[in-house]
Length: 334
Image 1 (cartoon, rainbow, N blue to C red):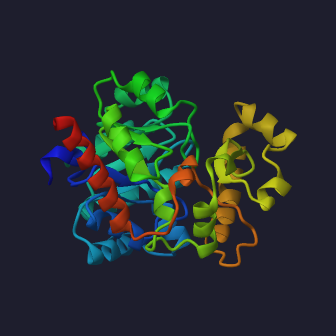
Image 2 (cartoon, helix red, strand yellow):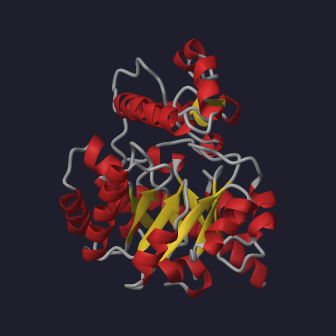
C-alpha cells in the first residue's frame, strides 16, 4: 500500500486505494465487484442483485468472486422497513458473508445497530449511508465505524447537500467520512480527498466500464449525458431517484400519482406502498438495465455523467484516480 494514499477507509477495508465501487441494484455483477477489488479498490456485493437479477445462490456468488480475486470485498445491507422474511434472509446472507471472509459492510435506509452488533463480534466494520446530520447521529449511536456521505449529485436516492456542505455537517462526529456522489473524473476523486474525505464511493462511473454487464445502450447513455440530463423521479420508488431524462422518462412523468403520494405520507400506509414500489421498481430496473434494445430507457445515473466520456476497464478507472490523488499529494508536499 502506498502510504500517501493510506486513509481510515483503506485501513478499515484492507485496500490500497480509498475507492469503493458502490453497491448498485441491478448493476453489481460478479465481474465488476471482483475487478474493483483486484485493482486495489473495494468491490461491494449487492445481495438482491446477485440472487434476483443473476439467479445465483448467494454463497456461490461470493465464491465466484473469490475465483477472480482474493482481495477484500464488501457487502451491502438494506434494512429500512424490512419484513420479517426479508430480515431473516438478510441475516442469513450476513452469516454466509462472514463465513466467506467478508468483513466490510455498507448499511443503508434504517438503523444499523443489529448489523454492527453481529459483525463487530468477528472484527467486521460497518459504514452507513447518510444524507444529513440527524441520520449520521443515529448511525453514530448505533456504533458504526464510518459514514458514506451521499450528496445531491449522487445517483439513486441522492441527498440534498453538496459534498462540501455534507462534510462540514458530519465531519465533526469522530467517524471517517467517504464521499458519494458526483465524481466521474480522476481530478474529482483527488478533489474529494483534498477536501478532507477519507475515501470516495463511485457508482455511475463503474456502470460505464467493460466489466459491468449492463447493456451497451445504458453505458452509451451515461457517456452521452450531461449533468443537466439527470432528473429526479418519484415513479420508481415513491421518493426521488436520479435517472437520465430520456423520452421514456418524460412520457411517464416525474411525480408519483396523487393516491400514492397520500399513502406515502400516511403512517400506516407508507411501508405498504413502499414495498409495492420496491417490487415494481426491482422488476423494471432489472429489465431495463440489461435490455440491449434500449427501448424502455429507464436508467439510474448520478450527475457524475458530466465527467464520464468513455467506457473503460475498471483497472483504468482506479489507476487514474490513484495517480491523480498521488499527483495532488506530491504537489502539496513541494
